[in-house]
Image (cartoon, rainbow, N blue to C red; front, top):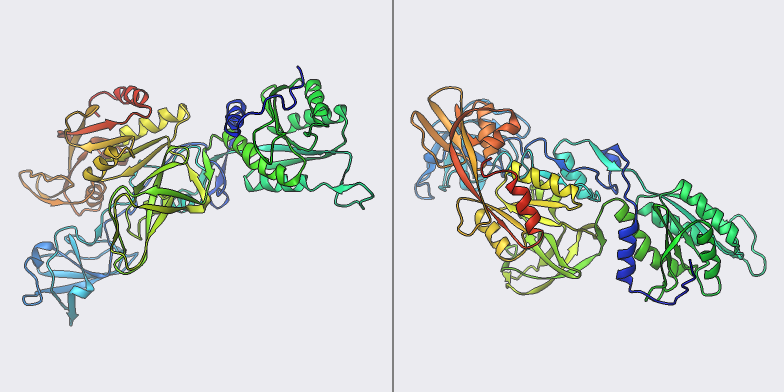
Length: 573
């Protein structure tokens, strides 16, 4: 092996790609408690095991009523209802809302049986066991349906995610207390130079303190690594080779500082020859950081950083940090702000400053777009799936489509989703996609969206996949989803998210399939109609009722892979 000292400088991006291609992935994992998991990288896809909320709940203080009782209610013609009780947060309602009755209810409390709307307190006047309602509201108003935020079987955190505080909050909301993460990378660190002394020594003429060991080891700890400090090594090829060999035995990666200038580089190259290394590159087109040297020794990498403290720190961020992320299968970009162009008109907060939460999509390096998330402050999924936010200033009614804004990245960390899936929830489609693409090294993020929003996201080239209920001409795949009727008796109340009539039942329309299941298991309903694939998540079985069609739209990114994966499901789920 020759000594290619600065003969050909390569671009920073080329150097980073060489490192990422050659680094060895960590394959050992461990399970940690959730209060120790922040800053660790998830080793498996994590799915929700419960619905959030797990019951239908009120989104504000008011009165839970039957919507038919308040039809036509107004200031001039209020509706009079008898108040049966008070449902407090954390309590199970006792009693049933029957025609002509109501329950006082707190924000977040469980909707009592028989109610299908919550009327805000400001539209009511209550006294002596009676409430007058001055506003008519449609069924479902001011109710957050079971599973309306997070659904059982939904992917919460994909494998390869660097866990940040918002992920910890989302996982704890689902009752997840133990998380499987990749073990901490062990990085061997040493400094090269005859002039270096330890902090416990008195400097003599020409000697300087070794500060790089402490700087680099501190940076490694911030990355969640375990630094293995090997100390200082003189400018001697045999001593340097011994340090490299020790680092290879004890660590997953070896990092040194110093010994990379023109006058010293030959020492390190000779040391790498002794250790059996192959130089991948030596010299980068950057200032500081030109004399970075990277070699592969067996299955591990050696990264030689400059000795100048500033150059060492900058080079660490450019080359060691990407190596660590690649070792953990994580694609996390540390960035505070990005510029995005608004996809649509974004309305303000009615006189208040609005912080619009968004999921950020990386189309190309330094080219970002976004997917808006629900603005509800009670939404756990918005917290979990937000990458950042932009501001609509107070006093502005809206920001126009095409306007450029600065978006703040939460925690200063932006994590790349290879495939963004939006639209209808299908545990079969989501499950096969996340597990199969995980084996390909790809990360899937799912955001539930209405039909219109999902189509818009797909047409704007933000979503890579959209799942739409119903048949859409020109869709890439059309999948039939089996529906089942689950009944404990052949008459009574039937709850369903579909507008379906069944002889012998009075249908109650709910907002989610999870709400129908909650109402059935809690005795609010005698029968439900839900997709079979969702019922299976709860161990429920029923009789075939029919099908609904799901149209799958697939963009150009990873198109052939995705079509191949989903065709394996068949045309019926």
